[in-house]
Amino acid sequence: MERKLVIPGEEVARGKVKLGDGVYRDGERVYASVLGLLDTARGQVRVIPLTGRYFPKVGDFVIGVVKGTIYETAWEVDINCPYLAILNASDYYREVDPFRTPLRRVMSPGTTIYAYVREVAPNRRIYITMRQRGSRVIRGGRLIQISPAKVPRVIGRKRSMISMIVKETGCRLLVGQNGLVWIGAKNQAVADIVERAVRKIEAEAHTSGLTDRIKEMIVKEREKV
Amino acid sequence: MKVGEPEEFIIDGKRLDGRRVDELRPLKIEAGVLKRADGSAYLEWGGNRVLAACYGPREIHPRHEANPQRAVLRTYYSMAPFSVYERKRPGPDRRSMEISKVTRQALESVVFTHLYPMTAIDVYIEILQAQAGTRCAGITAASVALADAGIPMKDLVPACAAGKVGGHIVLDLFDIEDNYGEADLPVAIVPRTGEVSLLQMDGNLTQEEFEQAFKLAIKGCMQVYEKQKEALRRRYGGSRE
Image (cartoon, rainbow over the protein chains, first blue to last red):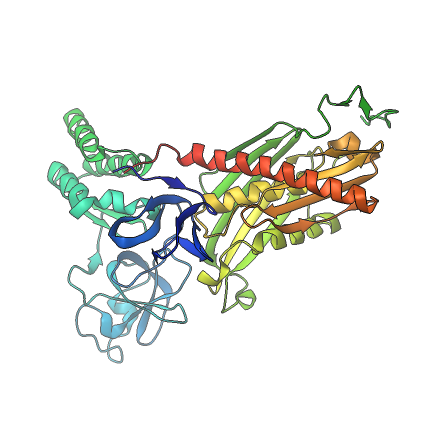
């Protein structure tokens, strides 16, 4: 499916339409507000951004790193966004009594976690939780950062890209919506291949037939090792 | 090496650098040139060389500058010491602080700052080489950098100057015309609505001359606007899913 590239200020629709993200209305007309691809599917007009920072949405899985300031009953987590993310002790994946065990001993600063965005408060404080299925503490492996706008491509439609990479390399792969990607591989050589594949996806996110090309690349690189 | 004041500014309908009175200097814009910035643009406009970088929205430091209603747009205009004939002392001075401020105001009107309360959007404009009209070049580059950073905005903001030299109204002054001319009128607009977001004047113009120069500057802005869009298309063009 070909989508049109739009630039801020470009007219994208007229009259009565439902507005999604990345557009704004001025009287009768609707204009793009971000640089991206125009999407008019499902009865609404929106622009899929091609660049930009990560902004948390409820329902996203993100990869975060526990920050140095740990409160009595909560952790502060860096999730690569301009707002503070809080993980309450009650949102830890198992019961902890913060008054008996200091939280610093449960998860120390620098611990990497895969967590779920539970709430974006009106004051822009982000609450994340590890009670959601799939959340966990991440140990070892390799953490890389890519542009958050390219994350959907790394995941692929119905996770097709992730599944393919996992199947081809036998590694474990976690992709946070915030652009952090964790690679858990048997050895450095495999991790190198996966990292290169992810970087290639990031660089060529706008092209079609990417899954097949990445698969080809992985197969070729695997033979070399 | 300073060139003295020329006797004539326009000879046989041509300006000293060979342009017509309503002609821009050659303009080249490239988007996304810096890897570590969220958005960036490099611009060559005649003898001007400008690099603009945009970071954000990001956590604001110092914290007390944060606005709970909207993002704070901060612009930093700075000239490299080697950008002019006589070495410029590095660091902010009165002139660059003024230009930072007018640039911020020119861009603030188009950025949807209310979407990102408590954050800062930083725009750095670095003049690598100057040949008059750097504030216009800076604003032009900065708005491309903002769009490249994925910042929601109403429109791009092109800027262009007009002025008066040797009794003629001309578009886009270069350094000799700027130094020895009679007036300089930088203008930035929001092309979609026709709003003016920067209007300054140095020197004197009569009301008729002003109107003529203003119209000419807007025409120049529209040409700059096309170049801006072209630069972004080139950077992201051919995109499909």
